[in-house]
Length: 602
Image 1 (cartoon, rainbow, N blue to C red):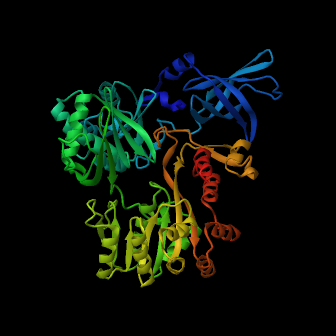
Image 2: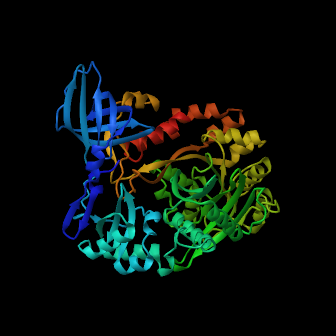
Image 3: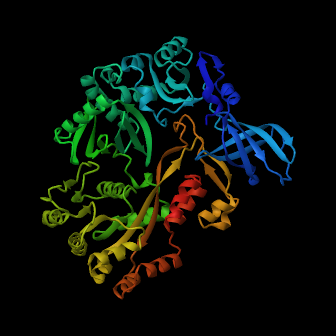
């Protein structure tokens, strides 16, 4: 669903509004679903039926029994659930019609964000550039004309431009892109830096799959694919073969997003090209393979490390690539979403000289990222010898020694850890504590004067104690070594520019087990030019911290388990993961749908 400004194209000082939204309103999509209408801080209608929708508005129906007033031209907030989609918009009631015992009315969505392409100065550093859009313009033209296409929504391409009054640029871009263009102004220095970051030099003007021969396409498409993933800050690239080619998707902020579809011939050549880069056997197509490689973008002087895996499927080899070491400057505790209390507890531990801190959570919850942020703090505050054991090395940080576990088991976690202790480390980071041997060595290292940081797969902070004991570690050793356990999850962060407020409904409050919060102000995603129409921009961490105090440690030695620790934590007022999620919901940092995911697994 698009906002009003998405149908505007700027030619100099003249804003020409096309009839895209008008056409969509005339040709509405017949649909079914439910709508909740909010008026101010209260729920006005909770069971309106959705009759049809478009990018500009919706037709709604209130069934018999409603005794309230529906006023024409009133401004409301409407949440619509239809066709497996849910979205919230501000709207105006444009018409009302009574039909027997029912009331029909139509709403037009209102642009609550308020950005005007003629006056708004776009912060290009905050914009999420869509590579599929940016790479449609040759780099030499983009650099010469100082234009950056960054988003396409509802057939309109949004472009950052040095001079929005230049009608020649509009004509050129519309001819190249074959789309309506909307120009946005930006700070010249920031735009120049962004153009250099994205395009570098003219070598990044890449041919598309339809413009180049197959052999050349495999090279250029591979380059474009990696560069596009880098631009979008994707964590993974998925290439899924189908009966007529392959679908390419990126995992961004934990969500899979479609990027491209390629035909079978190009897919086969692309897989071979990627396997060569990863030093895999291109003749072996019936067995899974794993490899890795580093890719350097010459024009922008950036390098990324990629871990690649192949898997034979019905239509060919499926390829998954994990992108590593994209950004390290942002790996600080301040940027990860810790509240002041949590941040103080972790910093207090990191200022110790010995002890064990374990990060827990499922795969992809950001455990290793938090440990790297902790290491960066240690490097800034103290001169320490830090050695890590990882599988694989996800970020490269200068000033520390990083050891990677060998797939052939020549270097296992336990073997590497025993060797590391002979290298006089002050801090040891263990990528994952997987077995009793590794756990034993880690705990003994923590007891003999080392600071040990590690990760473990458990559902909560208190479960860390149970998991270590289940591995075979003696309870008295766990109690003596473990000083801090941190459970972590990741939620998508709402875009600060377009989030939209409304009161919490009773059903939502029940879903997160917080019935006292009915009517509390919360925020929903909407979509704007900054977040690419997604409503979310980045992710934020949730945390639950367990400090194993002396009296609690004695309880562990006496046989107290996870349930006893949880009771003590709640009695002390220590927040659970759900508590932290609800706090961030009320602060407007995330949405109710994200918090419900945490509540459902609690």
